[in-house]
Length: 559
Ligand code: CAA
Image (cartoon, rainbow, N blue to C red; front, side):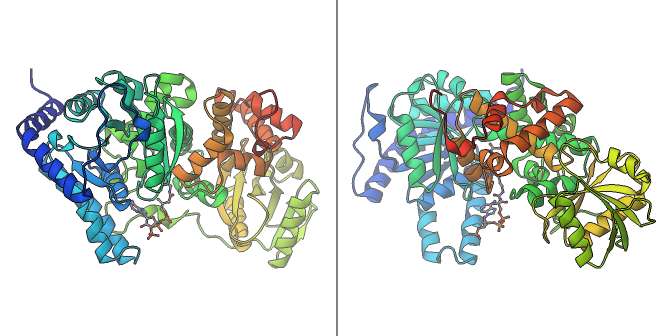
């Protein structure tokens, strides 16, 4: 049988580590002595107190993008790093990533050249496991394959002191399964960083049923020491952040694949509409479509709901090797220098803004705001549908379809809806809602009108949630369900999404800002239209809506 590449790589590591074991132990001991002035007192045996442990040297195993970023984070915090990868080529590529990141920081004036040299001096390259013999913590950041991880933890068990902590950065393999395969399962935890590791401030510290007391505290303290915020979670597929983020990204890709929205409009809906730092499709490319697929498969395996079924296009792009930024092409194309093509924005055909508009609304503030903005922009507005105008504009509202109003106006071909996200002001996102009867001219006129009002137009079909609600409401429902399941709470979930994924507001802050009632109504309309279980409003959301209790109020007495 042909030996797999993995087996060869792992065997290579093992052989290298065997031959270098004694020599490197001596070197590491010397290095530790000169670095710190004194060797750390080592605790021995099974009853060691891992809580009191100080972490002075860390091994980072696997120097891909994440591993290099994690090594940088430790070195910047004054911690010695033994940087390891399968071979010299992979190692020097990883060190190159780290060097490029530090040089960028110097160029931007964030680091001095002297600081750069100091940080770099803390990173020692190693190709053999034996060089990790004296570390206090090893963090594994290798590809998401259980057999590779098992081999690595076996090597770490062999070379590391029994009281060293072993961590995995896995996002899609059970930490419990990795721990169970280790000789000392009590010291194995998840230490889950976020991409880009030097920037994102969250570390999920993942414990298992096997974790020894004190390990979580030590790793959480370390996370604080390196400038991150730890959130402790119990081992469960996706932990907090990925379990919420990935289904939302997967759903966004489904919306693109099904033609519900264009690539650019979907990303704009998230950035300009919800205020997220990246659109879901650009973020999928950053994370890697292969990584995203693995996480979705694990979520589906654990929870089994249709929400976690990977969108076929995710699998196809991944199969094709179009895995995103790292491959030069994924959902967007990064191949040509500077062709970061998602910055192009949406590409709606320019048209002349209409001069005469019929405005149909519910007689509320939304309609009044639109009327006043159009008047200010020099557009003649009438409320009488019988007047001949260039466009019939329906002031669209979540949970209220546009088509009945367009039919009632008697000119459905000339009608589109307009839904402004938030209060109408320049720079806001506007959904130009098209019914199945809207003509291309009406859609173009509605788009031009939104642009004339200083809004950022995107196109959405006349379906419940339009585009922003389609992306957001099911995502918020997932967060509520995670809380309802007792897995986490609103504060930790909000912290995880803000620090791990750069959300300006966490899911519960978003619900409180919109009102639980609004989110509930949106979900009810989507659930009624589609019947998908992911749109079913969680009872906890309905309770908060009925009692008008914000999630920020904390748990109710008796909960
Ligand atoms: N490596 C190092 N630093 C980086 C970086 C990278 N890849 N990308 C950006 N930065 C730094 C920049 O150097 C800059 O720092 P300075 O201000 O010191 O110069 C800073 O971050 C801001 O960068 P930019 O101005 O270029 O870009 P931005 O303001 O658009 O921010 C971003 C970029 C931080 C990536 C932001 O878009 C963001 O927060 N996006 C969300 C990312 C996210 O969701 N990550 C989690 C993914 S899920 C995951 O990782 C878990 C998993 O298991 C899959």
